Image (cartoon, rainbow, N blue to C red; front, side, top):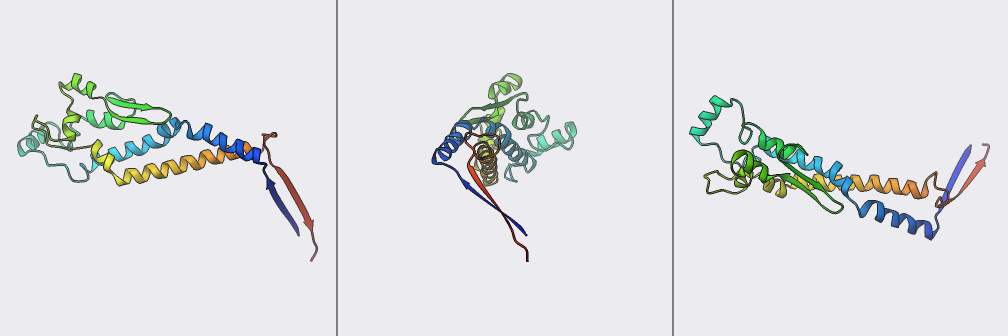
Length: 194
């Protein structure tokens, strides 16, 4: 029988360098998290809000408008007539989408100036709260902001991102290929015959 025993004895300096690397490489710049992890979670939740018509909370269309819409846009749901708002709210970098990722924050939404120019007024803003334009409130972003599903998904995404980054930094400081920071290892091979 052969047994292997591996003991890792990192020095205090190696541990300090590892922690500093985590802070410098992971915690000081979350741009990758915003772009690759948080944005998909936000888009998924916004698409779900459109698909469920605000989780069933949006008021129905007026009977007159519903008849007109059925004739001119058959099968189209609330806020999906031409899908301009839906695309802007769910397609990063698409027409009318507003996206910015920086080291410590992310902005995701719709460009109200785009809608004001294209449609004569920024109707997504009017939909977030009842407006004087006679549009009932059909909030998308306010619903997303209050969504426990989105909060849970963002926490899970952050946990997965941090786990991946910590593993990467750990390998960088304690794994193969970095001789100056590689920990000392002792391998003991024991042979015994029954």
